[in-house]
Every structure is written in C-alpha cells, then in structure tokens.
Image: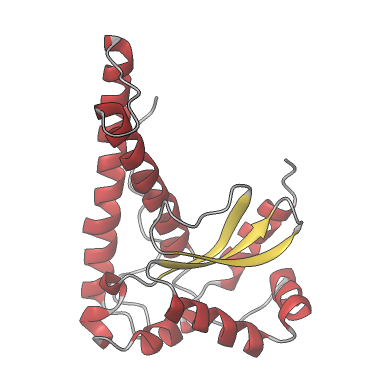
Length: 203
C-alpha cells in the first residue's frame, strides 16, 4: 500500500485572518503531520502482524485491537485535517450552489453560521457539515474525537477543528472568536468543489 503523504498548504501560513502563522505551522506541520506519520506506521505494523500469523482477535486487549483502534483515530485525523486545511485561505464570502443548498435547508447563511457555530461550541473535537449519501441532503454532525461520532456514508464538506490546539495560541479560551475567524477564512470555491463531488457520488 502506498504511504500517505503530507499535503502542502495552498496558501501562506501567515495569510489567514485571526489564525496566526504560529498556529498554522504547529497545527499543519506537527499535529497533522503526526497523523500522517502514525497512520503509515500503524498500516505497516498491521501488515507485519497479519503476515506473521499471530494476529489475536481478543476484544479485551490484544496488539491487533490496539492497532485497529489507533488506525481509525489516525486515518480520520488525516482526512479531517486535509479537509480543514484545504477549505481555508479564501475570502470567506459564500457563493455557488452550496450557498443555495445551505439557504434552502437552514433558511439563510446567517442562520446556518449561527447554528454551525453553536455546534462548534458544543463539540469537543469537530463540527462537520456533510453530504449524507443515504438521505441525499446536507447534514451537520459533531464528533468528540476523530473516531467517535462519525456517520458511515456521510462525506465531510466543511470540517471545523475545535480542539484547543486550533485556537488557544491566538484566542486563549475564546473559542467563539476562533470560530468567527474560521468562517472569515473559508474558501467557498473549494467547498463548492467538494459539495459537487459528494452529491454526485452514488452508493
């Protein structure tokens, strides 16, 4: 299996409004990079364990169980961070078909931003706008950890990291100020691209 690679930023780390260069460099260059590295390490160890013929399926504790738990946490950490960094670096002005879809579901962009922000305040890890392929509509889901709270068949469109490492350097415990800055930096052209890909995918 090819190793996962760190995806570079498409914008300069010092170009975001309200999210500092230091935060971006630590978040992208260390934390996200760590998930990429660990996901590769776990994949290698799982392959070695499988080939050894010594994979023990004990649900209380076994090396296999530990690796499989770490696998979902690490890989979801990779995927969600790739969405997070990929949709930043824009002017924050909503546009496209995704804007119309959000307004149809939530009444207005203001109502959506208010609700999504409240969800971000309520989450311990992530607030995510998804395309639910089962229900064929936009849904908002929260997860307290990368491998807790996700919905099978739901594709992230906007993944907002609300772990403290995302904002504490810049705003301290003021998460609401960070969430406001997050919206001001959204790249709605990229969000539109993700939305189109997701809603046109068939299970």
